[in-house]
Every structure is written in structure tokens, then in C-alpha cells.
Length: 474
Ligand code: MN
Ligand code: MN
Image (cartoon, rainbow, N blue to C red; front, side, top):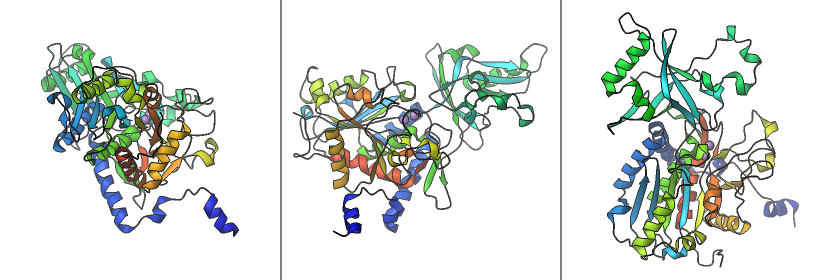
């Protein structure tokens, strides 16, 4: 055989997706991304996401599972776990015992949380003390506009919602870094220690309250907060306040091919898997979409993926379909297939030494399959079985989904994790599969519009897939 032809036949190809996109599809991709940019610009915390998602679900005829005594094929349900995570399902024709098609993403992102006693005054500036959430490079979070989001719960159980800094007419907040003129000592420190966690203090005010006492600026801020929200200093102890970048998602580049925006890890996979389940009608196998909280700090807590509230939801489905009292839960899990929909790092041309180019993800090359995450020894990885990777490839290849398969960086350089191993522990077949992101965990992350739309299509065909002669364990 001619060498060129043989090469075409045998070599794995990994081309830029835009080469094969026609004008009509390009418009679909760009339109989809307009809605995506809106979603991530307007919903920057897990609580904000849950509110927006519940609204979308209701518009699409999804009902809270507790409103049904019995469930039938085709019904659409959801369950919200403490306003921070959500489980969504569409009942399939087949018995739950045959397993579910599930996709799990997370809706928390790295940010700055307020400490329980945040407010203080230092030389006539009122400041908030923060405690960072998730793996951030601290130097990236100074001198950028920040917005304040969250809830303050009073001891009377009144809950006050706060969102300041997103509207153009709102004030913003920021952390002041040292000027270069006085930074010679700071600049000798490592990048990691250049900005210390205890220096991530946010400026919140500077006008003193009139009178002859101490801490008049702090008093003035408390007075503003009291007049606006009816809260006192002690109410911060039962608050969850998150500071996020106050920037909206924007098109990036002359060709507008990329999206820059905060919180794309992992709202890009959350949004695309949500849109995927919204597009499904009458599936053969029951479809479940999990949008979890707390992934960025280890998935602990009753809203994280370790939480048994997820089992509680699946048990509710079993009770209301086959009248089960709990003992088929493991059978369901062991017959279920799941994509852990989380982002991976895209190749960054500024740092070629970090990468092993044959095994990286690239922007515009489609959804990334990550067989295992973990660090040097594969430590902490959920290493998907080859049979299951083959099954997912089959779905994607039959449906013209563009995918790439990668690790993240050279061996030993670092590592990461997702919710994959937690769900795999339950006996589910799990594979990490998500959108590649540049500048992950930074205040302004970057994705490709093609990859975003392609993820939506990939998750949709995964939900719908039910091939009798597809791979199945006994
Ligand atoms: Mn993630
Ligand atoms: Mn992350």
C-alpha cells in the first residue's frame, strides 16, 4: 500500500475542529456560547446556579421528586440538596435495575470566602478578612474587581441574599497589592508566598462615621449594612459570603473563537450536561445529571459528592418506581455508567516544558477523555477500565463527537482530581470527560466555543445511548 494512504489508515489523527466546521454549524456553536456566557456571567456561586437551574427545570416541566408518589417512564424530576447541589433525572423505559446513564459535574469554583469575623479597621480603611476556597494562585486575586455574593442568616432564621458588584452601577471591591516601588523585598519571595493568604484582605470602605470614638470607618460600614440589610457584626458568624471576580464572560481573540470568564471549572461541564438532559425526551435508560458542590475542596460535606444525599435521591426513585426498600441500590450502581464531567488543563504555549505533547489536551480539539487523573504514581486516580473507555469511544465515534484523550502535564509535575473516584467507589463505571481549559482556577479562565458546544453534544448522546450489543459486565 502507498505509504501516505497507509499512514492515513493507521495513524491517529488529531486535527483542529474548525477545519471541518461549516458556516451553519459555526452559527449554532456561537449562538450556544452566547447563552453559556450569560449563564456563567450571571451565576457565579453554587447557590446562584441552583436558583437559575431550578427555574430552567421548571420551565422544562421538571418537577420536584417529592411531588410524585409514583414515577413512570418519561417523567422528569429533580431534588435540591440544601440549595447547593442538585440531582436531576428523566425516568427511562427500562427498569432502574438495568442501571442509569449518569453525568456528574460540579458547580462550585475557586474563590475568596469571608472569615466568620471578617470586618476590621486599619488606619481608616475598613477591610474584610478572607479565607480562600479551592486551589488558587494567590497573586492572581489582587487588584482585580471583586463582587460579593451569598447569604447572611440571622439568629431569627431570616435569610438575607447578597449580590453586590455585578451590576454596572454597583460598587466593586478589591485587594490592594504593594506598589513596585516598594516591592523589592516582596519580589524576592517565591511566587507562592509573594502574596500571603492573610494578606488577601478586601477594601470595603473609608468614610468615618461622625463622632468622637474609635473605629469610625468600621462603624460607618456597619451602619450602611444595618440600614440596607438589618444586620449587625455578629450576623457574619452565620453567613456564607463568597467574593468572586466581578468580570463578565467575554469573547476572546480577533476571531471570537474562545470564551474568557470566571468559574468555567466546572460550570462549563455543568451547563453543557444540564442543557443535554433538558434536550432528552423518553429515554430508554434512566438519565441522571448530578451537579455537585465542594469539589474544589475535596467533595466533603453533605452537599459534596461524598454525601449520601445522592443515595437518598436514587432510593427515592427506586421506591417510587419498583417499590424497592433499599436493597437494589448497589445493583443499580453496578449497572450504571457515568461520565465525570469536569474540565482538564489545555496545553499552554507559554509553558511548553510543562507538557508531554503527545498526551495533552488542546483547545478546539473537542472533549477530553481522561482515563485517570491523580499524581505521579497515578496516586488517587480512578483509572477507568479499558472496556468502559471503549464503550464511551463507541458512543462518540458512532455520533461524530470529536474527542481527544490525554493526561495533564508531564509525570510528576503536579496532578488533580475530580468526583470520578467517589462515584467509582459505589461500583459505577466512571470516566472523566470534560472541556479543556486554559488558565484553570484563575479569575479569568479560557475555553473554546467549539469544545463547549461539542461537550453538550457528547453529553446528549451519552444520555441517550442504549445499545443492546454494547459492552456490559455480567
Ligand atoms: Mn473541576
Ligand atoms: Mn477545579
